[in-house]
Amino acid sequence: MITTITLNAAIDQVYEVDSLAVGGTNRVSTIIQEAGGKGINVAKVLKRSGADVTVGGFAGGINGERIRQLLLKKSIPSELIQVEGESRVCLTVLDSKKSKVTELLESGPQITKQEWQSMLNWIEDQSQSVKWFALSGSLPKGLPTTAYAELIDIINANGAKAILDSSGDALQNGIKAKPYAIKPNEFEIATILGKATVNETDLLDVGKRFVDDGVEHVCFSLGEKGAIFVNQEGYFKADAPKVEVINTVGSGDAFVGGLLYGLANGEEPLIAYKRALACGSVNAMYSKIGFIDSQQVEELMAQITIIKL
Image 1: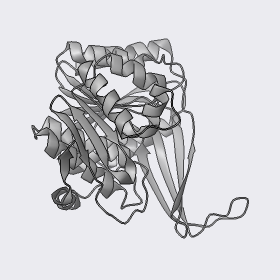
Image 2: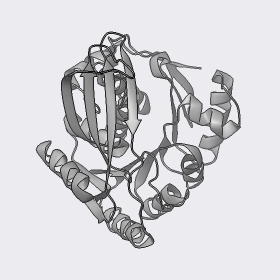
Image 3: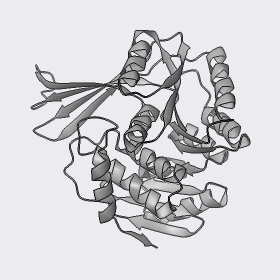
Image 4: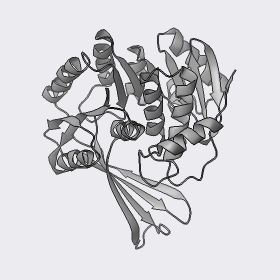
């Protein structure tokens, strides 16, 4: 069993237009509506990979009920804690002609202290039976930047393992709690280092620092450039397979889903790394967010070569 946590769940609404006219009238050719938020996207990838997965987090209002219904349609069980506020809608506009993506993201509900305590209690119970967790996404209003660190402390104390994918102070504080794996991108590392940009040497240095501090797997997702991985065995690099890109939204979540599926099923780390990269690439081939085809994942894994640096 794997549990994914989405503290700021959403309805993902995808509109496809022939050519986006800013300030003009746009006619939508295709509409896709999914339950969303990074942890939910991870869960969708895990489900399509064949994993037994449950979704946790917060959901509120009419949108919250719709999120539960959309998960049920995909046969993904959820134990989302009811909150007073209204869950958000995230709109993605795909410009078919220019192959560009525009995102409009609502901020989501304000979480109360009582609602957060309910989450801490739920994680305490859940992590006594579930051994793998994905903690993904931004923090909703009302939560401290130590929120993920608090969850990781509980998960670790109960002998379970967490993969963290966040940004800013939530990521930095979460890393201090020693999650089993993290998946920052270049921008997030640049922010941590206080730099405008980072190079490969920066990534290797900070990756080693995180591993020395207790993180087992540091996975730097580099988009179309592939990924760099750091663990106790050293430094590894892989190029992304060449695919026809339709929509990159959710590819980072698919990466986490592939990584988590591999590690939770006892795959060797390098195989799990290939699976992560392949899942992220397959997701980019589709308009849907957090979608993979398992056969295509296996085919791309066979094309990926990981070298030791």
